[in-house]
Image (cartoon, rainbow, N blue to C red):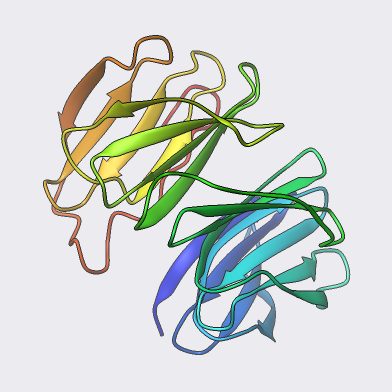
Length: 219
C-alpha cells in the first residue's frame, strides 16, 4: 500500500499506510518492523512527541494516539471531518483539517482550542517555536501565519504556487514549502515573507510533494 506520512519519535520511525488503514512502527537504526497497528480510514499525516505519535485519519475524522514504547494504540479521538495532518510539540498537538480548521489537543487527546485559518484546501503545518508561529499552507498560493498559542492570524503572505508540505528551520526561522505542481521548493524569510525558489525533481501533484523535514540545519 501507499505510505502517506512519516515521523520519528526517539528510536522509532512511524509510517502511515492510507490504503490499509494502518500505522507501522519501525526501528530507526535497522528499519526492522516493530508492529503494524490498525487506525481509522485513510490515515494521512503523522507526528511524534514525547514517546507518542498522533495519526490524522482523514476518512474517519479522528486522530489515533500511539504509545511508541508499548507499541499500541491508546486512544482514538474524534476531531471532525477530514483531518489531513498533525503537529506535536511540547505537549500540544495541532490538528489541521482540509477546510482550514485547526484544533489543539493536549498529549492525551483532550481538545483545548479550536480556530479556522482562512485557507481552504489546507495541506501542511509548520511550527516556529522561537517566534511562536504556526504556518498553515495548502492549495491556495499563500501561507496563513497564526499565533501558536491563541491561533489568531498574525499575517499572511503569497507563494508562487500551492504548498503540500512545510517545515521550519529552527536555527534561521526560514519556512520551506514544497509545490508539487510546479516542482519547486519555496524558501520563505520569516520577516517580510520574501520568497526564493529552488527547482525539485518531479514530485507528482497527485501523490507526491508531501514529505519534508529539517534537522540540524539540513533539509
